[in-house]
Length: 286
Ligand code: HSE
Image 1 (cartoon, rainbow, N blue to C red):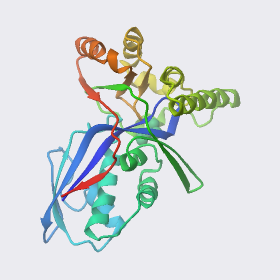
Image 2: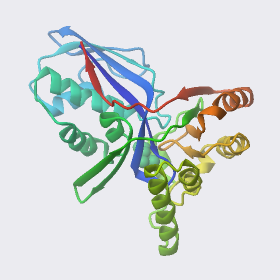
Image 3: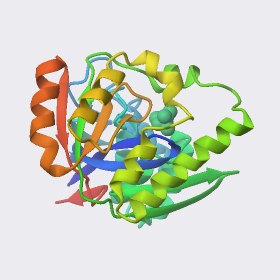
Image 4: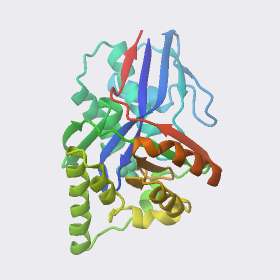
């Protein structure tokens, strides 16, 4: 059995902790068979191989008496770069328990569990449902709407350095002035209305006017302003900080993608991923 979970790009500008998009870059977990003790093969330095691994811990939190198995995890999702690597592990762990114990969990039940572990739904929701998910988690009450994403190319610039979500959240203010919050909310509303009506020009303009987190985090990602400017030169709809960063996502018309890819690769030395929207979310294959 194989469990496949997509990477995710959260926030899309002002959709902070609420909006996320599944993208075509994957964690794949092979379930190799029963064993006397848990073991997970992978090639990630510093990540445990035994039952203290986050994926196995998550599976055991869902179902404590699972029979130990031997597993193999391969992940294309860069670690600590703002593409939902830890969410993909949590979702894979929940699905592993679901399959091994035949729990028959619904996607909504998986989302409840994953959000409780992660603290916010914007990465785990699209990792489960695929596509774009708008969600809110307020007073332990979770709601979500899955939305088909309009056609667009997605180019992720993944810097060589890591940025931990906890560090990237530390630069955010404790409070936002009322006027600033109203402006932030207005552009967030425009993002959602633009996406729902397929108006990527207006959605993208609003994505680039976030007031909730990007103004505070930009200093942590020195390449951000130059990539946004390069995107504007190539007719991009939007450039935003993917999740907590440091990945910078550029959303652009499909016809503009090749020229933008060539330009960004020639000007920036680090990894560039040519992505599309994943429409399936977590899936299980034999
Ligand atoms: N919404 C989260 C953040 C995503 O920006 O901090 C990363 O977990």
